[in-house]
Image (cartoon, rainbow, N blue to C red; front, side, top):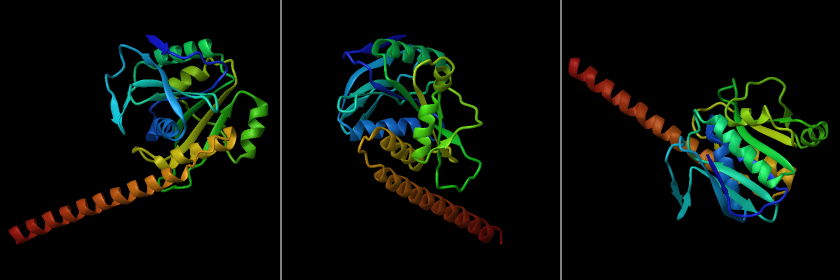
Length: 236
């Protein structure tokens, strides 16, 4: 494991997110990086990470990248690679970053499953290790997380963290990337941190995705119906 941090950063707010249900964490951090003035300041390298990079708008995105927004003193951990099987190693890497930067708070972003399949009003739940934070987040309309199972890197951090910690979990009921739920996380972050980031384009993106998906599904159904009619005509 190798944590590369090319900039001296003191007492930031660390926002960490790893691929999970609905890919909410990765969508949210990518959106923040795209809409805030961020510079890439490092990366986490682990041999077991899936060797994948992405190119987005001419920018190379590494498996686990570190980005810094000076205005808000934000250090963002952005992940596009599968982390299955290396959750504890990545948790150790996060704690090494915590040791190097001594953050004032750590915010973890993830999705949480919803049993209501057609629910579109995604709620955002929170878990905090401070009563003062509890009242602050409740005032901005978030729901305290009372019962749940947390998996992955976030779980490794929650099990050991002794600093100010906030977990934000957007409710989602789909296995596909959920931009609408990610937008609710952005809205919550904006209310809490005052980032001045507009979450509405993500809602629009979600609606476009859903319309395109519906169109594909409808066309698929038409093709199935056509195929069945051909079989009926052939055998009839």
